[in-house]
Image 1 (tube, rainbow, N blue to C red):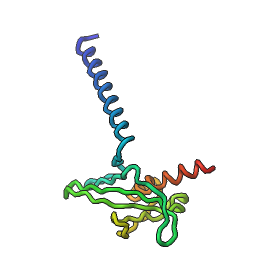
Image 2: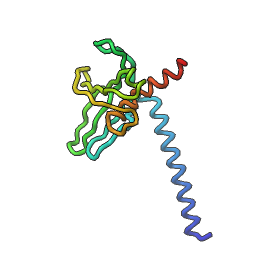
Image 3: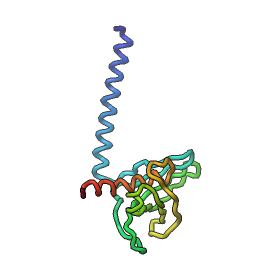
Length: 141
């Protein structure tokens, strides 16, 4: 082996160790404090879910829903907006429905159609919400 090749292997080993340590630190940090989890991205915006905020509740109309906090970062305007999202538990089970967006006080802003794994932003946000329903349904079987 050449000296350059051997040095290249050593550098790769060092990078792997550093990457492993970084991942371990990230995972340890994530277990002890809230994290923002990437959910969807466009050319201008990034949507993230706030880990640990997903809960099941009932709307004023009596529908069982899954709700979580999120944020939208607009890279062009350099702004961050905080929102809450919810989907009906029944819509999660059927795989399509409405994703409702609320302000942080719980006031209605708008709703968007979703299909789980549909590829749009609403579908990505609904997947995060509906995962909890899917896991709870598996445990109750």
